[in-house]
Each structure stands twice: as C-alpha cells, then as structure tokens.
Image 1 (cartoon, rainbow, N blue to C red):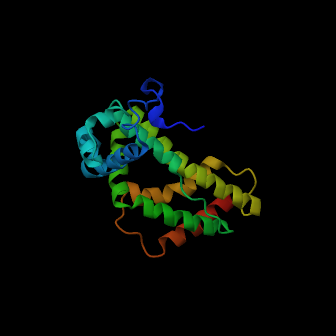
Image 2 (image 1 turned 180 degrees about the vertical axis):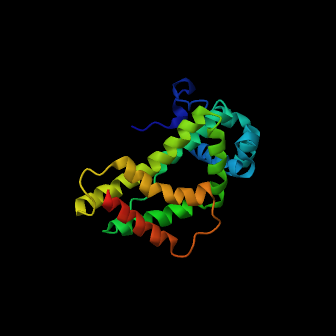
Image 3 (image 1 turned 120 degrees about the vertical axis):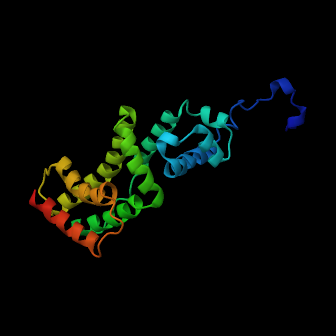
Amino acid sequence: MTTNADEIPKRERRRAPAGAAVLREDVTEAIRAAVFEELAAVGYARMSIEGIARRAGVGKTAVYRRWRSKLHLVLDVVSAMAVLGLPVPDTGSLEGDLRLLYEVTSRALRHPVASQIIPDLQAEAARNPEIAEAFQKALRDGQEGVASKIVAAAEARGEVRAGIDGDLALDLISGPLYWRAVVIRSPKLPKGYLEQLARATAGALKAL
C-alpha cells in the first residue's frame, strides 16, 4: 500500500533543519573562492567580511554562520591548501619526477592570485602566530607529502641511499624554486631553468 505525501499529517512530516539551505556546500565554496580573490585584490589587512560576501554573492550572515571572524576564515582557507596537495609524479626516474614537480609547482606559485596572496600572508604571519602556524603547515604539508613519495620511489629504484634524511631532502627539493618564485619574485624563469634545477637537485639528493 502506498501513501501519498499529501495524506501524511503535517505534524508527522520531517522538516529540513532551518540552516540547511544557508550551509550549502556550494555557498561555502563560493565564499572560499571569494577569500582568495579578495586577498589577491586588497590584501589581508584591508580584506573585510563585507567584501568577501559581495564577491561570493551572499549576505554577511552566510559568512558569519560559518566563520566567526576574518582571521578564522583565512586560517580555514589557508589550512585547506594543505589537503589539496600536488600530483605525485611517476616518470620512472628521480630527475624526471623532480622536473614534473617543478613544472606544476612553478605554474601554481606564479599564478596571478597565488603570487599576490603568498607574500601578503607571509607578511601577516610575521605579526600573527596563528596565521604563521597555518601558513607554514599548508606549505609544508603540501610539499612534504609529494617530496617524500618522490624520494621513497627513488630509494626503491636505488637512485638514492636508503635512510636518506627526509627533512634535508625536502629542503633541497622545495627551497630553490620557492626562493626564486616567491622570495625574490623573479618575473620570468630563465630558459632551461627547471631542467637544470631538476638535474642539480637530483645530483644533490644522490650525494646525501
């Protein structure tokens, strides 16, 4: 026997939670995207909940239902960077894996939005321990997860010695490109730079 929904007494019908529509995931993602855009446009210091809401096409209430302040919103977005991760290269050689990693990382770091956000958050991190911790975790987790797998694969192939220092390997892999793209913000990488960097880094790792 089937029952028409219209025949069910109203008091017995289950009602959706009052906040369900407000906390839709598509709205949350729109707000997160707006944070990146607002950071790139005006920086953390001038960023406001009003500006974020306007970019996301929502009311301020939608933002405050999810995050209680600008700081917590930015910390959440920065922390989310860590779980996005980078693709793990699998070219069959250490130098090839490093070259592919550098190509992907270089494009990401030199993206117009990222190139504005990262230096700004670095400056804020010097003043705010909470931002510093979240920012460092996002950068380290994203790079460390990929770098450790590249090194593990190279170790399995016998390209580097067993028991290689993981922290030192991460510094060698991630440091040079980050320095060039983020710290000194070189407008353009020299021709062949990524190939040379991959070759030099592979050689350094094999020498550890």
